[in-house]
Image (cartoon, rainbow, N blue to C red):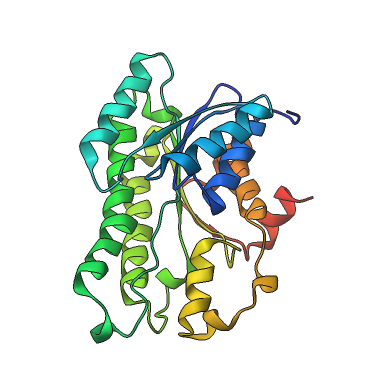
Length: 255
């Protein structure tokens, strides 16, 4: 492992950590000295990420759970504190794009599930994280956001609505706890080459589905931005929702 170890001593939880942006962020965090916990619903994919990190000399573990269920999350966060490894960084990365389709063509149960994951799940992890903390001033939270939270996209009614609510959740947390030193931020990573984008392309709905795989960026790029935001250098971005289109930020991450 090499680097400046900007997250040395931190215990970081990443939801949706088994693939895509979550996996890339876990690898970046571990490279900067954090003990990484990847959370998801599939043991095999989480174990693969843990294996990658450990093979490179890093420290990691997995926790299999459904983030729409609050109690196991709180129990886990409390257990980490009791073991002397309190979680101080959380990346709410888990998300769901489905159902894709015009509103009346979608399944209401899948629509509800989308909100449960993108909004309630993010709320559950944040609540468990902060409730279990003995020092909220040392806590950092990044909620992965999207440009779809700001404008409607055909076929994405539930995703746009749930992500818009999640973006407001970031603002509320900052307004209520930012004065105490808690750093919460939103980050819009742009068009990243992940499984979600594969589902979007397969749908053929709206202009985003027409983007080619070659036009997408590697998950490593936003993962490095998230790592920067969680480092001491990212403190000035507290309370903000920053974007891949922020040229000043990108210049600092990739000088």
